[in-house]
Length: 200
Image (cartoon, rainbow, N blue to C red; front, side, top):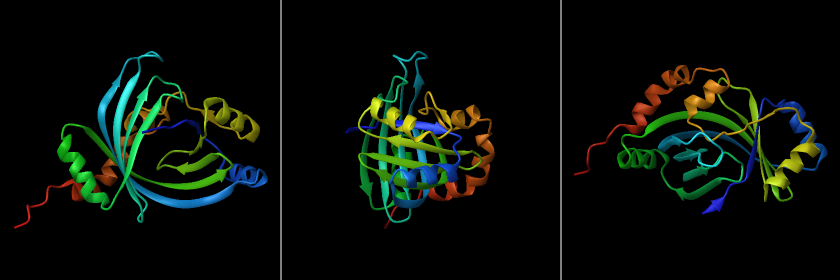
């Protein structure tokens, strides 16, 4: 189990961010093209900052490394995220296993591009999700630390109050219809999640 303290920022200029990171001495740690499933294990409950709670399982791969991660969000603050993650050997089989374990869970699939940078004790991720603007996340040891780094960077963007919402809701917040994206991915989802015959 690990606390995941991240400051999410939406609508950043990728070129301006890359230039600022270079000026600050950040190192490019990797570029990834991710495929992922999100299974909503617990729908969000509670409206206030203190009682808000949700839980989901992510199965993700970049083609060389695959992981399954249980994420829990308690409250809407950036210090309320806990995650449990293990590496797995088979992305598609793991997704089918989770589907069999929680067959009634809402599930979505999407692909995204990421650049990952390291800067001392911080990790900065530049993400591009389909139909959305670029976003970044600053991960660090504490809320004050990540907020302090963001202020020092001086990169324009919108700090997201709560990114721990179902994917369709996240897209709606940013003015995009996620169902259109799902339509395009429907054949991929069906192929991966379809039951396979038991071996003889």
